[in-house]
Length: 481
Image (tube, rainbow, N blue to C red; front, side, top):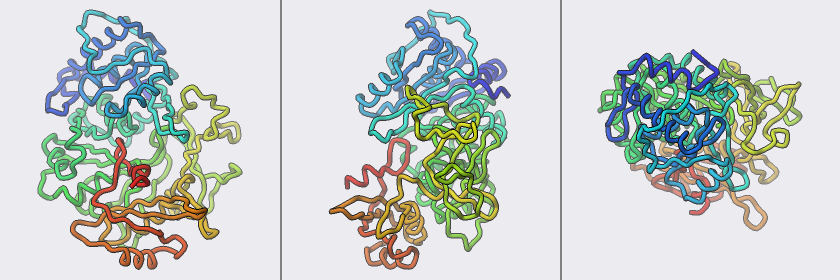
């Protein structure tokens, strides 16, 4: 398997699996590998006729479809990179993204190639751009994470070795294409002759319908953020659906609270559950396989595990010295083939998150971790979610974990504001089923589960937590409530 090119194994799959189903779109329409090959060539011809050349960027503000995937491949066949954005986002945000990376062409639903142009073959190198994913920036404007063919292929190759996909596998495509979870969804099956099942947006947001979709499409590999899986366990009636083809469930993007993870483990006893960790800038860099039985006395979330074999991950103190002591909280850094070289248009030497240690460039994830007794990394929150109150440094994620231990809480979100010079900690909780939660009950629980100085000042009980377009908790939206 070529781990230096994202596109080369796809072209091999086009030749070897022409009659197999490559994509099932949201309506159930299918495209074979042969059809996807021809359609991607048509997009490549359209792009070339409009001046796109090797090294250029093609902006793709399209909803999920067979054509969207063909456009991605078409751009790469020319040696160009693609830039997917949220088609439902405000146009001003997408305009900023496309201007920031100077796209040569914007391909929306009006791009309909007719096959009249036949593009010349282009040799793609491992250091050529494959795609740019834009993430939220600390300045309020999105910043581009450019990933080369080597970066992306290194990760996909690891996925193939770890997931051991088969040609008749069907991979869910739940994440939006501008979200980094989609890299696994798309390219692992395209490398191995499997099938991509695009999840309709209305189904993807309804945990009651998702199990039926998994059964109907014969999904074998599911990948989403933990909150979606937690809601599926709570409201999806998993035992009423035939999920016999499901072999692997991957989750990433946020902490999976232990209570719903226990219920998922019990509901899917024969399915591999993989906790994948890594920001967009590194692809997935650590992983942990949830055991067949989660010990009854455990209260902390599962580890994020150990480094994937295609990169190196370590814990470092603020002086960039390795931390090896068990339990000591330190910064999580990663280096190696899947890690970006720098943000788009920014000098790596002036990027604080890129750190030189003993002549090697590491990416500082901004996350905190600690080694457990088995040599696995435990996630200990983000540096930017740490506040200081009453002289104590408080990680807001630790308060969330404490609230998640309440039997009647489905999930919780915690944030902090500053009012009259003091830090105020807020908590929003979603009850399990028809459970009733009152402020007094929540305060009593916090008194038993957390130190007094960590207890939230204010509580809200909500039917659901607001979500971003990538399915993560929308803390900005919560602050506006």
